[in-house]
Image (cartoon, rainbow, N blue to C red; front, side, top):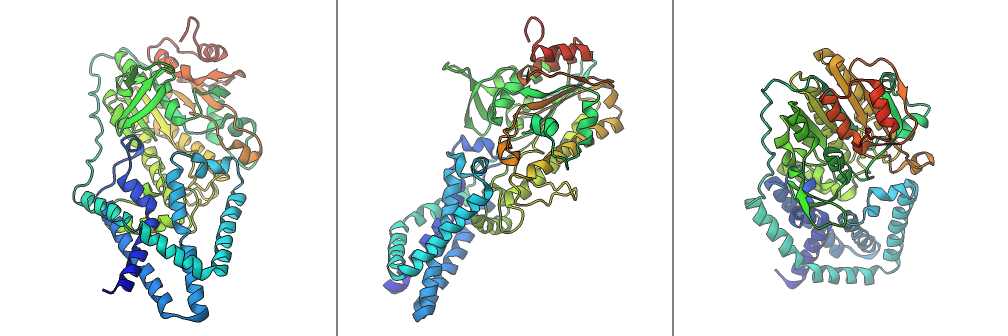
Length: 516
């Protein structure tokens, strides 16, 4: 091959390599800490798919560059402008990668900047690029080719590592074996279900509910519960809140592996593995209760699976992590992911939004199983129905919503209501509702509340329905949800059995007389 065609091939391959920047980053450079939020590590299909995408992109770009060389005049100039515009594609991959450290480059940006402004900025960048490409076509085309040649050695790194991992893929993550059911005579006759709906805001759900939003199941439960819409959570981040609620203590957290979260007190060097810290599950088991856990975001079953008799979890979907694992699906998805974000896509629902819908339905099905199982005394559910990306369309009752990073939150609140109704109906059909005490709350307020209706999110709901309760008791003060673990345990032990006792606990801000 002559020097000219080889340089052309190298330029095309180098640009293809840059297009796949995020794909390579996810597949090749994830750390032990990154693996914490993965359902599973990339498999052989993912590495083969990335190599396939690299080859396809290289051939397509090589064909474009060949077309440019064979053309002349205005047509050649137009094709060179197109080539220069294609240099923008890797910027989306770079943004997604850097956003891991700077969330404002991802979904957090929409909390402070209108979606229209973000779109306008992107279109302005595209327009400016086209203008510059038209004004300095030959110079910029030459510079870009030289830069691509300089960056071409990176091809050996990305493709070489991918080939190696395709033959020796990372070891799959494993859940801990579940605990054996408690067979001894029960020390507890109570049954408790604790449901945490992620990012349900107290103000928006109750005080400032949109006029066109109906939440019949939440309203029905409210009429039979001790409740407040001013719950105060330990943190505004799920990473901190769930370990705090489960252990009853707010810790600093540090991810150290796929199945490891270190917990430590602020300002102290000593840390403990989350799995080795006393939890609501270990304390419930000491009371003779069989516990079940179904949740998302945290890899519960890899950490706490041994403390419960039934466990299920789903991950938080991201763009590349939603492409699939089979060779063909991951190849098609990997190419598509170049042109969309986790929340927005020109193809309708983004890959992450579609994955969110699938995860929601899987987790809800497992939640229905455990809340309806008579052998389970304590169920802990952490459900993602209200969390972005929003996939549920309340008007059709289907998971078909797309490109609704903010207004979709209202639809997702309707999904929370539907899920609550299904959980209750499942317990009623199984004959366990009348002996079940139900706690419904959230891990934090809606952090994009101001962008939604002009007011910041405020507080979370906290509804406590005692088994057989028919009357409503509202508490107006703030209640710290960190104390909910102790409430659960006193319910299981039979120490708390009346609405008046729960009302007193709430009026004391989430503490019992004499401490938690």
